[in-house]
Length: 192
Image 1 (tube, one colour):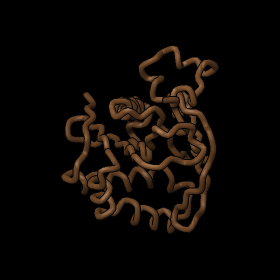
Image 2 (cartoon, helix red, strand yellow):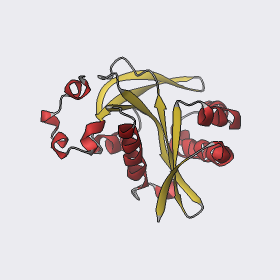
Image 3 (cartoon, one colour):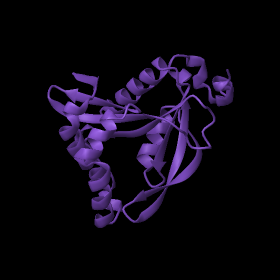
Image 4 (cartoon, one colour):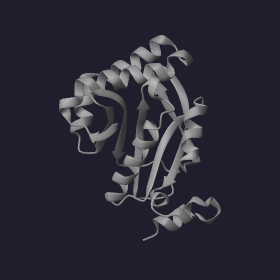
């Protein structure tokens, strides 16, 4: 059985190694090795992971089966991209699962746990950046109610890439009527 829990700094070593490995597994075939090395050394170093686990703006959720780490997600509070249509937003900054876990539903369970957490904190919109050359992730997020609203640059090593910005109203989790995209105006969900 898969369980989802919040990580603290006692998980930093395991999380840093897992995050670097899953990033490499996801993107190494499509990027220069030196760029991947540079990015993972900076983004997933132990000191960076401890800092993110301690910063008060980030929450990491871990998916486990027994003692095996299967995946993780990172929510980040703070400023959103200008194209995001709501002020009460939270970013799904990362969502990764191990290669053997892809397609098992663990990613969806992590996403739903993130949405529930964001809802409990009063957020009304979740947004994320996803690489334009990652069609599987883009389709996964579309199936979960995210819509593309813009783009931004994302630098991997020395390579400037384009991420699509996608957003999803948090209310869709709790209100089945909002699954009908034609009746959903994200601005209405964010009105005070």
